[in-house]
Amino acid sequence: MSRRAVTASITALVASSLVFTSASAVADPPQEQWRSYWVDSFRDSIYTPENVDKLVEDARAINANVLIVQVGRWMDCFCNRSSFPRTHVPIDADFDPLDDVIEKAHAAGIEVHAWVNATPAWNLATPPENPEHIFHTNGHDVDGWDNWLNVRVDGEQTVGANLRNIDPANPAAVDYVVEGIASIVREYDVDGINLDYIRYPDGNTANYQSDWGYTAASIDRFQAATGRGDIPEPTDAEFSDWRREQVTGFTRKIFLTMYDVDPQAALSINGITYWFGPQTEGGWEATRAYSEVMQDWKAWLEEGIIDVNVAMNYKAETDEGDRIQMYDEWNEVLKDWQADRFSVVGPALYLNTVEDSLRQARRALEPSADGNTVVGWSGYSYATPSNASGSPEQADAERERLAHGLTAEDPSGAEPLFAQPAAVPEMTWKTEPEHGHIAGELITRDGAALDQVSVSATNLRTGAKAAGRVSDGSGWFGFVNLEPGRWLVSIELPRGVVGQPVDVVEVAAGEIVTADFAPLVRPGRP
Image (tube, rainbow, N blue to C red):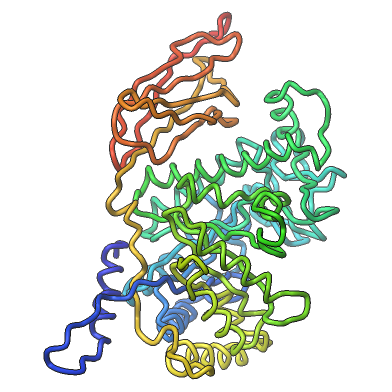
């Protein structure tokens, strides 16, 4: 069932649930509000058909309309038809969890967004058994650029005991993940992809700085881009900006690659909201999301390279440690910074009682001081619906209490938040697009990628210019949300490369056009 069919199904459910006070009463239009659970695959929520049946039943109990289901955990997949290897978890080889979730959720009018961890590569002391897993092919035992695992300034490649992460500055690693995500969108009728860990790792020696990014590929590329010959400190502003752009470029590439496969599939990310909000920290650039893990989700919304920011606003509802202030500060900017895209507040159910989670949900959905609201709520997580979910039996009981509070009887006495079904808000920029996109690759005739080449695009009618792009380590570049019409795409040819430095393309609404600069030649090369 397609996204449009799911939306129609939800609309029908909403219409059927309306109560009329008289024969002449006119029904209100269907309510639109994103309501989801994050469904992690560390627990057995999708391991069997029976698990999936229960998941969908429990989602319906809260009138959810989206399930964010973790299928890509450690460069693998809880599915059978992606370019990622199948998960190491010993589930029936003939069972495809993602297929089953899609079939059953769509039948219930619920969208499925495949949750993929963008950078974690492995998180167990025992290596994966599959010899083709990147842990073996591009992990600790491989040197130079072929080692994709991020390196901390002290030489470590792990966070804590086990967690390894790929480096967003390694071109081959990025392309591996981009293709893995594209393969899921190609092979499965997902309504979207949800990216987690689209950032630099935790495990830093101090807050507000990243100690990561010291791989051979990262330092080589940074030095080539800046002309510097030193190894930068973690606090180096130029290095931080460069690393931040690697994550942004990674995200842009995923967005446009997905769009090329299925323009209707939504790209969401799990946005970081560490510690206090920008109100206390002194602006967005002073927050830990921006300065420590290099995740500039505010700019991603503004550029339009993500459709939804499902923000992980994980705070305990307690006065101790100013957690309530932190939660409310982030909610305020999430409501006000949507930039014609969507923000969803994702509270931590596992940190709170059911009653506190209901209070947090109500505040999350209230208007900001400027009158703005987020489009919805996502609870983390389905498996741990409260801080009293110590066993499966306790989790089931707490999930029932949460469902009752959300749909039937709120302890505050207010109208329950999710008393009626709702449709997922329409992403009109996808269903009725007014802008188009440009992508391209800068590859020489001998197969070399031209890295960090400046690229700009100019509208030949209005003179509007899109600048500030550079090609990535694979020679790829992209522009999003351009006005339809003829655009002049220009590149700054590197020294020693000859070719035509401009191309004229026709941008059409809802489409990606390719800017072609072939052939690019390095004299003396075949």
